[in-house]
Length: 51
Ligand SMILES: [Zn+2]
Image 1: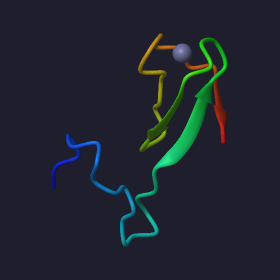
Image 2: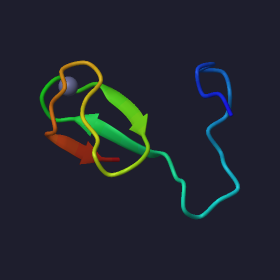
Image 3: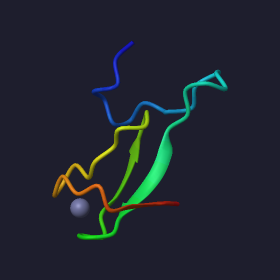
Image 4: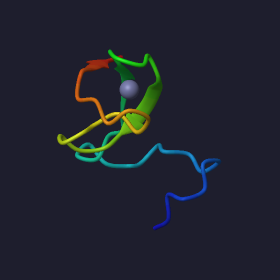
């Protein structure tokens, strides 16, 4: 399993692992992340909005 290649689809056959799309409330960057402890990759903010 390697997620380093951005061209790889994040669609995974599992109900447990779902990439959630977030928007940062501070710098407005959009990103996808897994898990619950998520912070913005650009500014490390935790002021995130689920898309
Ligand atoms: Zn941010």
